Image 1 (cartoon, rainbow, N blue to C red):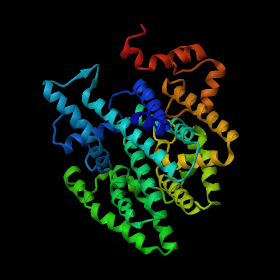
Image 2: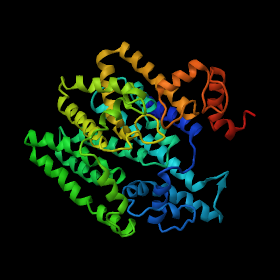
Image 3: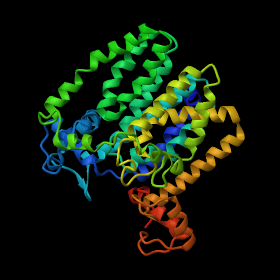
Image 4: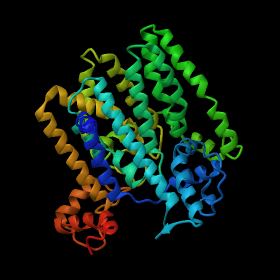
Length: 424
């Protein structure tokens, strides 16, 4: 009876998590790729586990990898322990148990973010929880970076920022003692994605303007107790290098103005609003939220969003290579969820229909990107439309672009077909 009542109480959370798990297990790649090679190498270096496959990928001064490595350690160690127990390194067509453990880690941190997102919406007394969370999950890069690109740092980043936002909303209005945890979490966030250093600024600015200096003290006290992780990682896990030549060269190339900020949002190549238009509705929701008794939190959330867009605007690789939507901004997942939930809460059914349509557009775009109807690095939704209208794509393995072949290719993607062996 107690289990049944628990299921009823948390049915929306359970539904969201099960939908994610079903899609994730069907599309997980279980491989290490791209920058994930360096993250993986750092994980093994931290544990002092020699691995000839990953050692060449260890980069001097690769400081920003370290935070992700620490969060992946429990999952990696579990796989390593199993391999030691059976006496061999498991390998299934190039997929090792160790690499699969990193994929499962990303799945886990995304699930934790989904659960926290429900708690955030509950704190704010917002309805439409399920449609808001699933809409943002499948419209933005959130699903992609936790399933298709799981060895990157973004899934851990989403989890940490979601926890950060939850702590802010829970403690900034009431008992300030809990703000200690906001400060304590901050260094870990910066370790995972170093541009996260700007995320604390809107909150501190709010407390300064409202002359709530005790709250600032609680945040700073939390920071002081965890800031020691920076020199530790610099000294022991960056090969003794505080600054590498690559870091210096990157700083020299930085522009004096965030000239790429607008491209992050509206450029056809991975622009957030172009690939994930549901975020436009989310931003409208946050703006409308400033007219309510939640306006102080709304301004902090908008400030966090604006600052992260601003800081990544200095980054010349603004399109993030082979990427779905703007994955540099995907850590703002909880802010998008809050904005969309408020938008739906305010405008009701027609807003829900609009968000569902926007979500299905992004899902369709995702599969076109994933099965290479168009080139995932430099081509755009406009190219996708052009290829569908002409029925031809130079990246689609010589096949025509039509609905039958498109659905067949998607069907062939899902690992259930191979894992369960139901279809030949």
